[in-house]
Length: 496
Image (cartoon, rainbow, N blue to C red):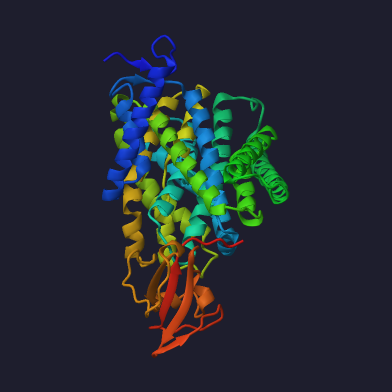
């Protein structure tokens, strides 16, 4: 079949391009329904569909790496904006340090361990220098926010020990470390701007770039976030659609300004979105979030389809075995070691919680987008890096993504999706939420004996406690006992 170039006007006019996009999007939505039935992550299916439609499949030829990088960055802006708007500061504050350490020190440890493994085990076989080995590790150093948000929220996983907010905070804020390391190593390989730098100078330059990325990103995020809060509280727009579009413009502004100031744009927009979602008095909040959620699904679909189109399965067999070995090492050695070392000071977090955190080292669009940077910069061996990262992403989504829910249940770290209902004669309208009951176990009380110590997920509230046939009105400092029957409501929460 003759390959078709999506961006070639000679081969495709606008109508044909629109037809092709509509077919791909329709099929993607249909396979999402199939994937939900069998527990397969939708993002994995989007990637596979893109590969099927690509030059090695149906023949759609697409090799615009710079264009794909731009599309991916735009999509990540929408995805992180929605995630920030839906993040509750009340739930995030207790795990702020844990998430921040995982997104910085955790990423650095993962890159160091993985880079050493690639160099000493595979470096000679693959004829890769130490810098290229560490470049590959840096590209894959972070967990992918799109994958984590999609799987945790798509499966409606209500995790114990406040793990949900911690994992989302980590995945939403760990890109600066991985991206900065990628940029610095590419500069070292290409010799750009560091020809006369000493070893100490290289370390200093790396620290300066990293510090600038984080500090500028955080500063711009807070400044734009609070300015947007003031604006949204003062300006009343007709309907929720215009308000949602205004928030979109704020996100683009925060991203662009931070990037122009040499900071991390994604971190800036994520922080500004959290401030808007928690501080601004948004009318029709539910409608705005529904609008943003639909836009996020569209961006995820487009981004993963485009990245799938870039893949060349015919070029992957030579690097398949090394990719699987690296993927297994990251899953079972590098990620667990970095998590347990990073969270060592937090003794209240159980070993089971740290083990589940280790398993949520999901790869996705982020690592693939980072892998495009060496290709665009013309780094020797960049094509192999891209293919290896792509295989590891497929492996991670297929293996970790499909087993995350069952693994959390096996560790007894999530609330049952369909527990037996005992509402004691109480009724509640369906649109307000679902009533469920929960029997307090010894595991529930490991972090403390009061109701507050349970760290219930966002959208879950205890309405009543039944003990020895009596009904007790709950409060935060109420001491709980094993066997207490909690009547809880599960639904949307609009806490400020």
